[in-house]
Image 1 (tube, helix red, strand yellow):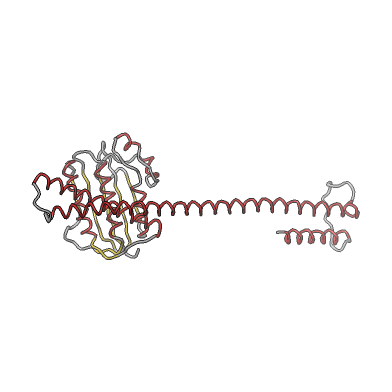
Image 2 (cartoon, rainbow, N blue to C red):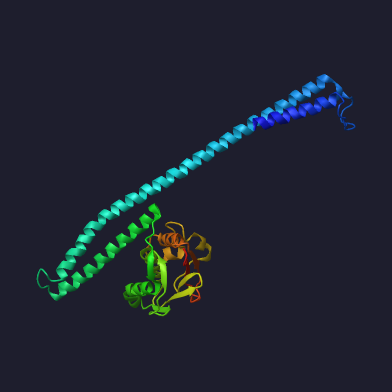
Length: 321
């Protein structure tokens, strides 16, 4: 910048001197000056000094402003790096704590399994029934811990354990898990796919299972008794399309843009009294995008009603993700 300023100042001075010595013609602006002072060496000298000073002053201001902008940019970059490092440290802490929690849960699951195998003796029927329920709950707890570890590993290490798996088989497994809740709430589930079909996909089975289960779980959670839930799976030329819709309470139109924010919960959800942390869709979006896919959320859904508009979630997963 200084070199450019010097070159401009020298070039301008040369032009003025050439004009002063009549080597190049001077074109006067009539009425601007009463006398031809531009041919007086004192005027030319003062003019060049003022011009050079103005150029140097401008250079000083620009340099100072540029230095401030560079310093602010550097501070911002360092702050972003510190935040990223703090987030990684948080994820490591979560992984460490959750991993420690997993140990006693696994031990409880093992002891319950051992007791139910009746290797320690016969068990009265009422006690056995309660032990079976405890075993199921402990298995769910271990699975939950594993899911937290997978998500933390995904965010920290950007790690996906990809393998070939049957998407229809995964959907059947999820439907089997939620069936008791569906029956309890008297919800109508519509599966628009062949249960015996084989639709292979190469991706992280556990993470995608967790993402889809989260969406279906939301449909169940925010649907009233007798509502409909629809699951549709279609193979497209270059990817897989999953559409999960419901006739639940839906999401207000003016809040759809905020649904992926951490801890966000829609205003109508808060009024309904349904518990939740608001992290679900943010995690789902992260998982889908790690598979180079897209997620689209609409409300109302195509099966919604006037009183229960419902929500529709469309997942697109390319085969070459």
